Length: 553
Image (cartoon, rainbow, N blue to C red):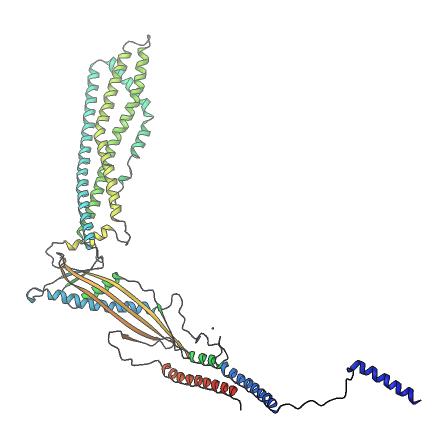
């Protein structure tokens, strides 16, 4: 009984051993013991790894303080596309200061030229037009042209009047002649008189249908010249990267944006003339182009030219009115003559025509021809005068349109001419005779908007810089330069957006004392010191941690 059991166990043991463990090769031997140095090295390696994990965890926590500051502060003062009204305001204020300095320089130059120190009343024309010679030449040309056209139109008006008289005289003459011939026809016997009258009546009846047409043509023949003219980045988590990110918090950004301010010499001229006039002197100051035209000799010449043009137009209308009936009669007689001539030719070919009919028709043809020629001859001089009038008035109207049309600067030649009148005024009124011409030019005006941001954000204070430069030259009416130079000014304006308060200071070559400082400047100074200490601590901590890793305990 014992043997089978042992065999089963051996069988079972062999089966399990075959499935789970490899066959035994011999008796088990104990493993050799580790080298103590190796065991100590493994322990040190584990401690170093733990220390590195701890350092990285601490640095990650500190570095998270500077996460997202790759581009510095994000608080800014934003200006819209059309914002910044204080910049142009500052620029114009600086320009006004330039005008004040320019005024002092001009009056000083004038007084230095005073004869024997005696005060003389002067008339100063202030202008921003550097092309004084060119505009003055245009002014003289305009005056001369208008005066010449006025004279020419005056002569034409006289010719039209004489043509009207001649037309009326010619009409009277041919009417007298026709009446005389009518008396002579009566003396020739009743037969001939009655036959001629019958022929003429019939011929005039044939032409009567065209009379209304002729009169309508005469009424509408006046061209447009008859109208009167009227004057017209990512931060790293390494110690060095964390320190760099913290130091970057100390940055302060300044942004300077140029404002849209144009160079305006016209404004400088207005400011300068106002300052000069309010200086309390007895001198007279004129602003170029800013004066009424009532006392202008150029405007007076323009008014005279308009009056002469209207006079010519009126005379031409009168002449046309007188000529219209003559043209109408000539048209009637022309039709009648054609009808009677046909009748006469028909009678000559008719053998059964009454005795004397051909002679009467021939006489009627001759009479109608005389009457037609008389009217054509009477109207011919008037027609020539009307044609000449139409040509000249059209030329004058074209010139007037050019005189009153604005150029590229928005100023018409007539306006320029009027503004130069007093340069050549030689009246006894001392207040009208210009003695000096002052040219002012704004060579530069500009303004800048200055914004500031730091780690504490925007302070709400905006700075504005404004500056202007101007040049001037003063001459007398003879063209002699009396004085000239340049004037400049610049200012700085600080404006608090939150409170609306502002402070303005003059920018000069010397350094101005800064009386009030931005309240954030002191805080920023302490913050810089604190951030630098934290950054330095990070670097020291990083070096100590690295040393602990390299030199183990």
